[in-house]
Length: 216
Length: 382
Image (cartoon, rainbow over all chains, first blue to last red; front, top):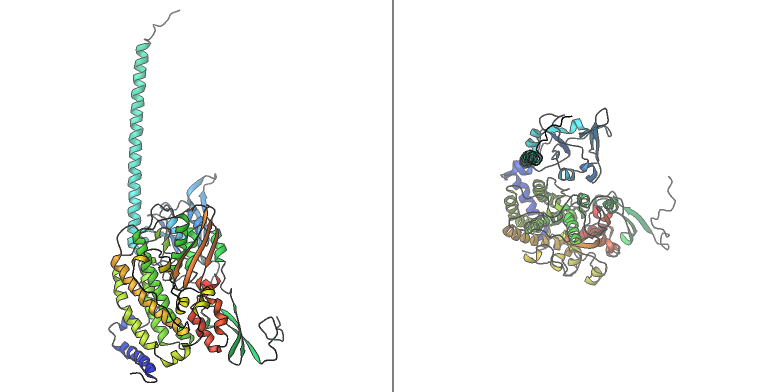
């Protein structure tokens, strides 16, 4: 079947089959109708990521995992993170951030900060409605807005959060074991030192018997 | 600002007494694939002079990379050819691995082939839609193509967390393994792909209007294509058997069997058909990779990604990206940052012949010729 115009007719047949067929497609509701966005939200993939946030355990002040080591600030490719370390009145530095700002108008959601963080403290969020009329104020996200609980993290990335928690737990056990070993060693060393001291004392006592007190 | 009375876009005069017209095509034009601009001089409808104007999307990528750490440039490579970010990642990773002599685990190589060929598939699918758009048919073909591309992007989102800006490759491997059920999903989806390509083919190939617009338009001889440094589908459409997957045999490509389609005439129709045929070869590659993928580590554990310091030296690593030969030339001084970071973008170099191809054609053909080269401006301007 090859007459002039046959290619056109063949193509139109494909569009006809697609057009009419769409009314009888079993996947019609899933595939062929646009998502009515503000009313219905897309179900995001678990790995889906948008902007970083900071994790805290239990308490947003005491439980903050970030130690303001500033590795993420240094590694961030577009340099959108700004950290200032906290210190007390005497100028003594704490291992926690006082200021932690992320300029999400610059952030490119690459998650390099997540990968380089040694304290499992910064992770990717999946919120996406961040637009605002205020160009300079609300797009710089501050520490108070960034802090979110570990439970929230478990809610959005369950698999990743579980592995993170397992890693933290393993590190904690290892650290505890190491501390125990160190403590035992210290105790053993102390005991040995005490024993040695006692022995030395005994030896010295033996070698030099106490002289009778000289009387004048 | 006042305009000069003479409206020529070129430095010299307006031709020797001829009634020519200078038109600035783009940069804001839906057919210029982004912000590409062409200064065109026409005699009637025929092109007598054409001058591309680049730089509207310049982002200083190469200089930024000299400021960033080695790892920090990886997300920037996503933005080069933003239709196929994964192959950009791959080219950069290949160059760095060559520079530092890093081994890649086998599973990681298979993952790279799977995601890379999915990228090629979606790039060529979108090409089929876009070139129809360039011919003035903003309808069925583009919508069908985007429908299928969206499904591949969904797969990417489940795997990497982002549809397009994936940041997926790492030096000596990939960032994360497939989530549970991903491989089955991808495999089931690829099973349905040949049917879609068949549908596309019966919709487009054989259509008399499409043939009239593509056949015999801007043929490029094999010799000319080689001399101009073309690569990728554009080169193979001219009949040159040159595919870096075969020539270099990087990764695990030597283990997989696939054919390299070639054109004969090198006209727009050959450049169009070669994408369709390559998409079919990609499906074959994907099916083999799905069947053979082994278990194992996904990244070389020896490599320190943060604070990565390759030894002093330089390397040029290249892969066959969907657009052509994508290469990175890296020079290291042994520090945390590259001393020089240069990209060989296929889109830019494939544009070398644009004027020659367009001369003597009609204005409407310029769009089709540009579309058949398949450029992405993120890569042209960098």
